[in-house]
Every structure is written in C-alpha cells, then in structure tokens.
Amino acid sequence: MNVRLDEARLRKVRRLRAQGIALSDLVREAIDARHDALAGQSASRNPADVVRRILHAHPDPSTLKARTYDVHDRTAARNAIEARLKRRRRP
Image (cartoon, rainbow, N blue to C red):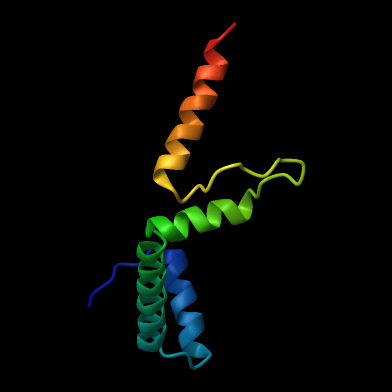
C-alpha cells in the first residue's frame, strides 16, 4: 500500500515512529475501526431497530391516554384511524 502524506501528517508519522509505534499496526487498527463502524451502520438499518431507537428517544408523554384498541391488530387499528379521521372532518 502506498499513501501520499502532506507535510503535517509526515511529521506525525515521524513522531509516531520515534515513539516505537508500528505504522502497520496503526493502519490495521484504523481499517478495523472503520469496518466495524460501517458494519454497525448496516445493522442500524433494520427497521425494527430504527423504530425501537426512535420510540426510546421519544416516548409517549405520561399524560397520553391509553389506546382503546390493539395497535398490533391491523383491523382494529384501521377502524380506529378511520373513526378518528371521520370525527376530524366534521365541523
């Protein structure tokens, strides 16, 4: 691998070498860290994880009334939403 460095980074490299730090180890660590960060991002794209994080960051207020229907029941949720929309349309 061949990397071009500007003068500032070249000075940093010389200082690291003088301290006995192997640059090859440093490059391996940087590659591993970047790869792990990318792998973590792809896991965070799981919709269930995204929703879980959103709900954790923004919980329902304690003053919010409990729902009168099961949000996991598609039919019940649709009926409740339709009823709510019909109520809002009336003047």
